[in-house]
Length: 75
Image (cartoon, rainbow, N blue to C red; front, side):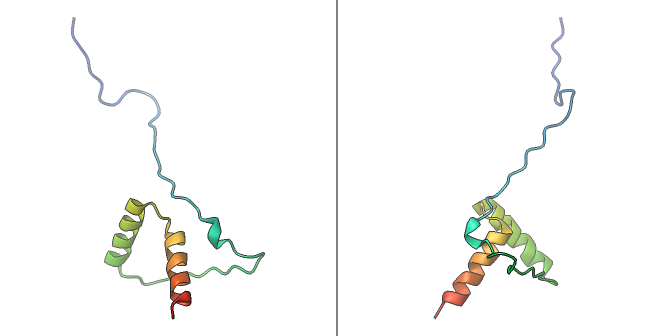
């Protein structure tokens, strides 16, 4: 009798996606929230920020809004 090992079992592949929490701390009031798209961010910087945010468990939205809040509240 021959042992058979299967590296990839048949059937649909299971894709695991990490979902970082969506902070309700930054919910806009009514329809007053604004969309703003930041363009021409250096690719290396954006890649590094996304990787660090992912490692630290932050969504990019939460990270950017937290940084903006800290900037406004700073003396």
